[in-house]
Image 1 (cartoon, rainbow, N blue to C red):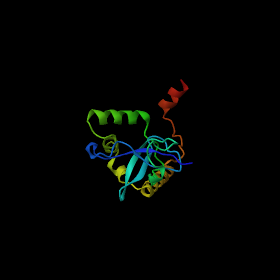
Image 2 (image 1 turned 90 degrees about the horizontal axis):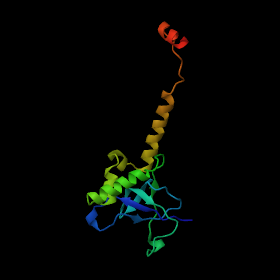
Image 3 (image 1 turned 135 degrees about the vertical axis):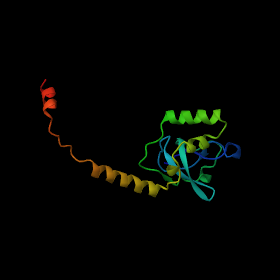
Image 4 (image 1 turned 45 degrees about the vertical axis):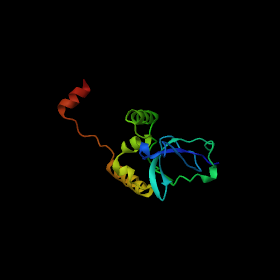
Length: 149
């Protein structure tokens, strides 16, 4: 069963593209999930704003392109974050995508899904090798006296 996520991307407010672009996905995507989506001849980073199970009204479902990939391993951006981004976009008269993507770290904006997976795997290995079982240290006489008290 296909889903029809609305994705925001970094397009200028005056470009006429709009705040949300509709795509097709074979899986339900959480609002706030970071995804790679096709835009013209390139792939760009976007944020899923919502993910209904019905195609957008007035659009041909066959004309919508598929989400290229989901950046797995990162939790979706929360509802509070999305509300702040939406408010800031309206306040500064920018597109929601401009504000949302500018708020993300630059290194994350340029990552491909495979690169992110490698980085997360490396981080997990580093965390696993650095966590050694805690061995209790010997107490000083003052500490032992305080513990007894």
